[in-house]
Image (cartoon, rainbow, N blue to C red; front, side, top):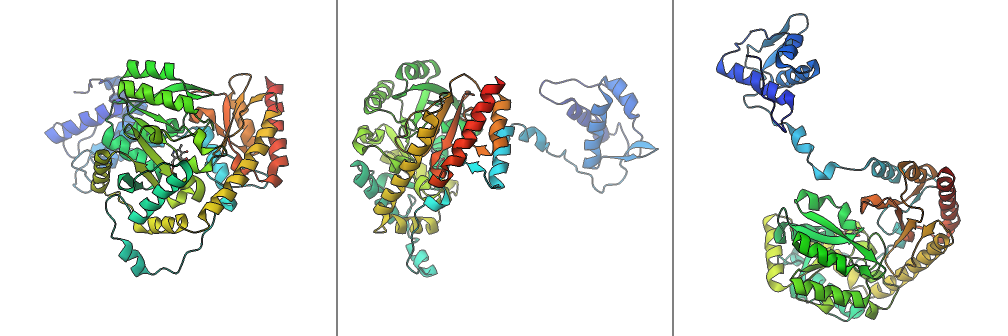
Length: 477
Ligand SMILES: Cc1ncc(COP(=O)(O)O)c(C=O)c1O
């Protein structure tokens, strides 16, 4: 009677639960009947006693057995508390949850971010500091006003789509037609929709290595296989990309060509053109994530969006997060008509439609007559902060850095190879919070610094902290 079949992938305690439940349900174990002692069960089943205890705990929680101190374990005689169907073992589900896996170092960094201490510098958070985000005042709005404006279609609030369209025209002299624009709840929702609608579990996607996308659990959760392609000074390496496309039958190439997160790198015009040709050759669509585009320190002509170079084969994602803060939750996606319709339809079915409130406010900000000037001031300030942090880092021989051309990230690579867990902990000890390269890649040799968060007055503090960490790491190797 007391034997189990050990099945691959099924925890042993579950097999014991199922065995005992089976006996109760078929009447081989009767209400009030005593079960053998834990020790005897363990010996008969040839398992550890703790495994038996685990199984009996589960059956007790389900109400099928009662454990009385001194008189052992009996099958429950009453009906109260008995769950007639075995309860879902949520732990088995949660073990596979891609959203739950947070690296312990990141957990500590995020805790430190939540409890800011004096003298601590948070250059980890991927946002502008509050004092830099442009502010706008709004005309008095009534509830009715919002309700009236609610007459939007599935693509989002039309005046906002038109305003976004005009912005791209002003800056990059190309049009994202408003009829092909879908307003999303941040760029991440746009990515999510693409994964849900255009890709399937098991599909392969090529991304830059390192990449912000590597850090997002939504790919893993959707069963998408990511392949990293290394980058050189000009951007994603095309020989490697071609090999990856052939070897893994890549379904989509996703790049962040301007002021990339995390490296800050910008793809040259030549590389952009060659990337487009390569993807056309293999008929692989490109997803262009261009969320930093408004923060360019270099001329817009040098970095035309891929979408401008190949409107038909490129899906384009933008966002207000990087200039107006991510809590605005306004992003957009531009795609050919047939694709955008399906994405909008899918979103409606998933009931992820966007509220009119943030859209109306975002439109008021974008159409504010001081908008352009405020963004120009922001850009200038961020640029100066970038140059100041770059100078400090470039003067330290242990780190390899490149001068930022836009965005707000500086990527500093430790020239002597990989950093060890002990080295990473120095950043926490000294209170310089940065993003480690291992969240964007398998690399362990670089840090991402959000330089927009270092105000002029904080430069000496930043310098002394990074120098102290550097000296410590050097002295310990
Ligand atoms: C490259 C990149 N794409 C997309 C996003 C997501 O943007 P949003 O806040 O609009 O969802 C971010 C945010 O950090 C990003 O860095």
